[in-house]
Length: 133
Image (tube, rainbow, N blue to C red):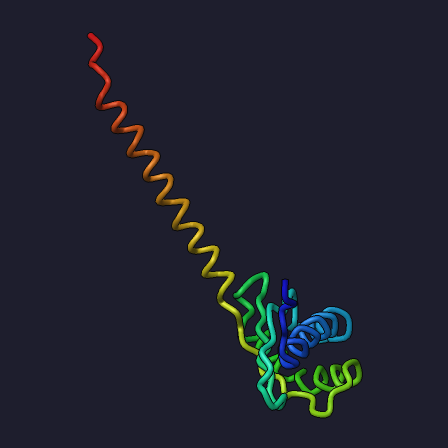
């Protein structure tokens, strides 16, 4: 069985995701940044830019958190440079990741269809039963 090959950009993305999550959790002192989870990092082939995908516990603070992350991008970039030895440390661009919300919504829709289906089966079973006098 052959080993799966990962590109250098993939390895850098994974390492940056781990480091940024740790930096946000332990080093970032901005109270506007609450429960942020870094869900992924996409680094360009030339390593000049990185999209940092994140989610929040409550999406009501999205604008405030987005602004705070953008303001702290320089600090986080310098921390990443200190932790990971790279010739070029990418500029950080923060993007809110809607995939978890979409997943929860899809799960709710599936559960609703399953409940509706189960209810219609019960109604069908009751209509097939003979009437009792």
